[in-house]
Every structure is written in C-alpha cells, then in structure tokens.
Image (cartoon, rainbow, N blue to C red; front, top):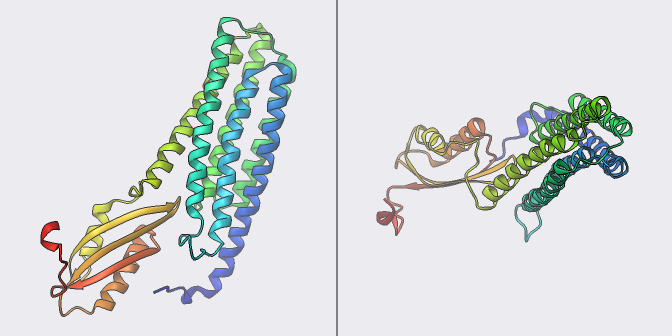
Length: 308
C-alpha cells in the first residue's frame, strides 16, 4: 500500500528540510520568548500598556510556535499501542487551552485600557520606543530566518509561524508610533488606543484557534476538503458503482484521514480499484491515511435498506 520505493534518493532531502524547519522554528521561538519577557518587564517599568499588550501578543505566538514544534516532534515519533494516532491529539488540546488563555489576556488588556482612556497615565515614551524597536528588529530577524531556512510555502507549521512573526512586527510598529505621539504631543491616550488594537488582534487569533480546535475535536470535515468532490473522484474510477459511509476527519493540523465503503462491479478487479482509489485520494486531496472497504453486489449490509 505504501508506494515510497520510487523516491529513495529524495528522502534524504526531505529529512534535511525537516531539520531546517525545526531549526528555524526553534530560533524563532527563542527570540519570541526573549521579546515577550523584554516587553513585559519594559511595559511594567515604562508604564506602557502598549508594550504589555504586545507582550501578550507575543504570548499567543510563543504558544503557536511551541505547538508547531511539538507537532513536528510528535510527527517523528512512532505511535504507542494505546494511542494509535501517536500523540497528535495532544497538540489540538494544547491549542484549545492556548486559545482560551488568550481570551483572558485580551480581556485584561481591554479592561486596563478602558481605565486608561478615562484617566491616561504618563508613560516613559523614550524607553518604551527603544524597547519596541528592539522587539521589531528581533521579529524581523526571525522572519528572515524562517524565510531562509524553512519552506514558508509548503509547510503549514512554518507558514503560520512566519505569519505570526510578521504580525508581531506590526505590534511593535504600533508601539513605536504610540511612543512617537506621546513624545511629540504628549498624547498619552495613544497608549491605550494601540493596546486595544493589539488586544483585538489577539482576540482574532484566539477565536480562530478555538474554533479550529473544537472543529477538529468534534471530528468535523477538514475545511480544505470538499466532501462531494471526494465522492465524485472516487465514483469516477472505472468499476466503481457508488461510494457510501464516507468520513473525512482531521487528526491534527495538516493530517487528514478518510474512510469509506465502495461498491464495485462483480467483474472489476478489486485490488486494482483499491490501488487507484488510494492513489487518486492522495494526489487530489493529499490524504495519506485512507481506509476503504470494497464490496460487490452480493456483499449485503444488513442495514443497507435502512440507509439508502
């Protein structure tokens, strides 16, 4: 069933790329953690909510980077007898927890910002801008590393990490602008304004994470795959009469599974049909875990007349 023999030499390249992905993700993670703490301490010292909120934004990205690394690390581990899908599901639970945490963080920021709108405190804008600038440079650095070392186009994990890091850079730019306004015009209200914008960014990513992980945990069909299209592709294979009991679900992000029953003509060679079905699914939809039960007319489901 696994037809990997024809690209033996390509496998080495693949492993090399995976290591490069891991390395650049790890680098991005370390930098992001460092900026997070820098902005947290800086925010407390300079009294800048914008820095604090950007540090909350970093927290969201630290967790998503950590999850991406975790996913890669787990993907390399063999499944244990009791957990047949390896430990993939843990990643989804962690994502859900992370999403909920971010809601709390964003809530705190907005709560504090509302108080600051009413009574804007003074902020040490000079040091604040310096810290934000360091954060910005570091973010651009890790974006550069991800661009160079990882395959931003192909790998889901590397791509999301890259987008997160760019989002962080924007947060730092926002903080710098807030600092400029405070320095030039003493508009201390700029600080809570930027904070609320960043908090909304955090909420947006948290909402996305929660919805996505709940969808996966509820065994929802992958968003990227059109079920009717799958049915069509399978029913177009010569010898196939129909496809029923079709289920598609996600084990963890970027890893989908499909199972179905296929009714074939008596004279069809079931093994050929099966082989073709598995290949079509992999080439059209990139689903590598496929389980198909092949049936002919004389094989009758007991409940067949109930379902159809």
